[in-house]
Length: 434
Image (cartoon, rainbow, N blue to C red; front, side):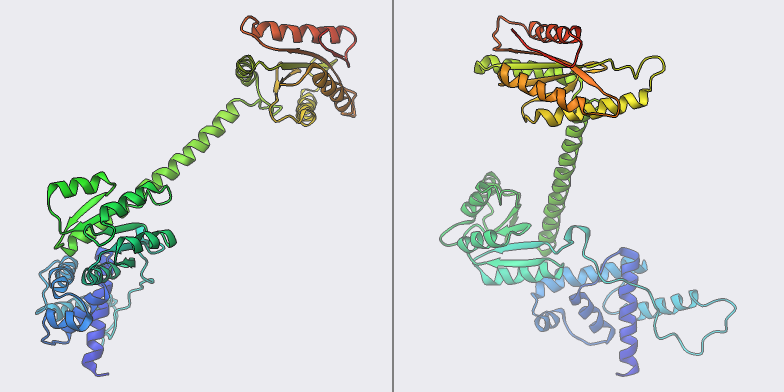
């Protein structure tokens, strides 16, 4: 390789790094080819370059090249064109080299061969992480080729379909993040394709941009009415296509972020509701939750003509909170007993709650008096096994078939009367109705 070739490569690398530093923009391969040709002084037209690279001359002349010169002009803060780019970049390289040379050092005998700027591997823009897939649907191969070239140049992964039937099959096999859809196609037109996509819950959220030669207002209204999010009229401008594609992907990303945030907020709200209904010490439901749950199950029992049972429990001779007691040990016993009650009940429809300081209430939907009493007897055994200090409980149960004429207060009072009778009998026993 000649010294001139080396110099051109150095200038090209310098230009790319400078653009990245100043504008956070990466040069495409086609832009690098245009810049390299200009640096080498080759008298090639944009038409010749487009033909060599397999791109549309219009795309090169109207989009890629102007964007390159604009980036360089923006970076260097002066007008840069094909004719002066080598001179300007060479001057900028020398200026940069001098700025990086320590003032105490002697001037270098020769200009530095490279300006080293650390550049990591080219990441995709934030919304292209994982490569965004775009499905192009058009029955004209030349349109597919042009759009594919344009979009692949921007780092998108492109899927192609020549008709509506193939498009629907492609979406079912490999869902894209965006669809560019022609309207006038054989067999199934674009409107029908869009309608079928929007009717399917698995594809309804894929944004569809119509790209069509139809330019009447009615055509555009119909496109939006069947679920399209945007409309591009042929012949299209490349910059417009890129802008509209990027806009829809940005909207899609923001919508997904919003859905994720809403799901997190909903989960947090459910957790707050759970904590608001929980007794901190015993980790069973609190009194507020008991009142709400009993009211709901009472109404359901009336509607379904079902029975409802209530069990009230109170610890016997629980003196940990009195003079000379150990509140910390008392808290420990209360938590342990609450968990024993939950494990003993083992009914998914039942609710165990802390009813008072040393009392618990259990709502038991659709359990008979005999079933409720049997559970209460088992509960006596389980609590008495808690050691090392013997602890017992008194239990009162009541069972009823609620009606509109009976109040919830009377139901609770019946359970409480049975509890008091159990306590008056010395505790560690169960008193049920009748």
